[in-house]
Image (cartoon, rainbow, N blue to C red; front, side, top):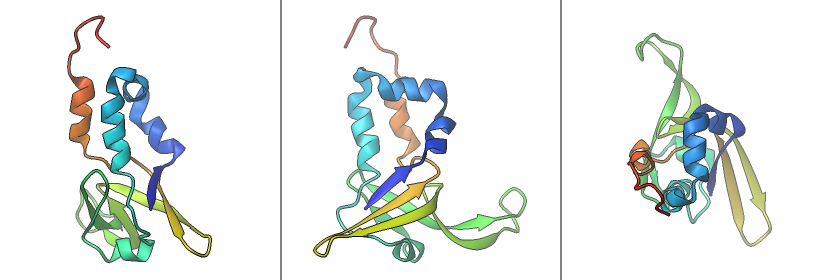
Length: 129
């Protein structure tokens, strides 16, 4: 199962974050972010909806039912969707080749913990690689 951020998710990151992703000095951080977007077994949208979270290759990610409406988090109603660490599942695609099933969930944001960005935000020694 792959949780694939869509194009809008990457645009929402902004220029600074995209430069950090592309910087070779942050390669390890990018690998950790990517690990949070993979599960070694197929997990459907319904399974996500009924779970309290999932364990990815990077670690545990909380799953919640998505809510629409309300004001400042009060009075909203469940809309039948699911969010992982605050990012909503926009669409789900399932590929079946007979032996294996692959599921790709299109996400509207990254599901990795924001603390991983701290590594990219640390000051680096000029000229270091």
